[in-house]
Length: 341
Image (cartoon, rainbow, N blue to C red):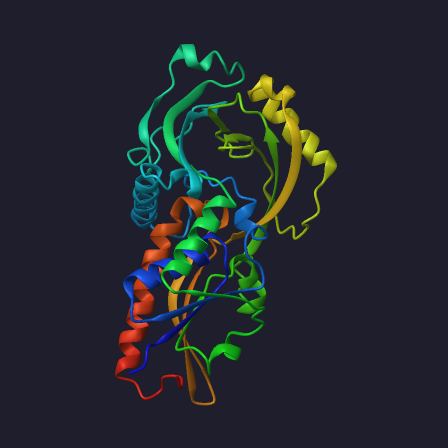
């Protein structure tokens, strides 16, 4: 059998990392990434890239923890290598603070991040509006650097990158054996997923090199995430809003909220406003599907719907998607219905 052909549709952090996992686990495959947008024009480029998991109500906690652990381990190794700076991956310490003590004082991921502990009374004096807090060290991926590093890795392993708008998965059936759908919010239209909805996020990227620690309000709305060159200030969570235009009133609100947590940000310079649509659903859609039309079958693996938590679990879900692609290819070996090569 000639080398099976796999198309990964989507070039955000999920698409690129899934393509890399497929190339690593199925070296005999020919892998192509198809997308109408590449970095710096993806939703992933707006994201802060902090490894603090978002909880998916429809996904078992032990599965979410495994995805997070695999992602943390993978990025931790990069952060400890000579590639860390180019890949934009670094450790960052800080605080998550709460106005009232949360029901869950130990989140499921507390033993994956480093040095997780309750904040001391002395530390809490920095946050007079808050009564409880958690201190820990986690990882941050700066974008675009991380996406560009992934693209470089993909090219080195022979993966093709093509700028192409895919309007229907069926248009790929004569060219590829397996299609991997990593289109994020695009899956709403591409596969008609009514369970998928946008949660609009507006963030500010500012120059404030003196800010070294992350600060996150436990409600998830206000956060300060220092990167290598810029600090990300957030944010908003607007369900069902498709608006990609920055809202000046919201910019002021975000800035004021962040300054109340870290007053020194009043001196921040060079404020850039970014907007992205988080592809949200009750659970990540990570599954195989066989589409059929007039006796022709199309093998699809879906990996989308990561919402606000894509960076925290991207490598774990990419590994699982690559495993599902392997199952599809194994099924093809004995099937007369595979697409013509």
